[in-house]
Amino acid sequence: MGDLRKLKDKSTLQSPAPRYNGWLRFAHIIPYFLGETSETNSNVQTEHKKRAWTMLGLFAGSDICKVLSGEQIDSLENVIAMQSDHHTAFGEMRLWFTEPEVQIPLTH
Image (cartoon, rainbow, N blue to C red; front, side):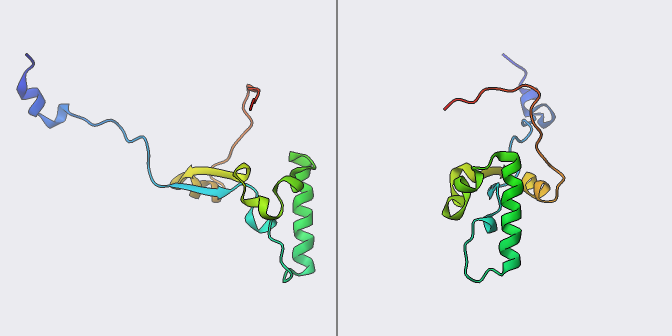
């Protein structure tokens, strides 16, 4: 049998490091305001949105606007989930994503 004194000694009973810190937060990848269609938008706002979609189209393909505009902006294809502290860092541009060195083919 093991030494009971070791079990009672709290210094030998260490809990594992926490694996999760904070709440899980969901956010739009493409900002929500780009999907809004409102009659109250000014011409300047409309022009800014057009330019933003054009820029996104250069990186993601020209179909991105068709896929995610309007009500589709809330689709699951436009959602990212991060723990709260990572979400804050991402919003403050202290956390970002890069392309992986190895490409894994995606299959559905």
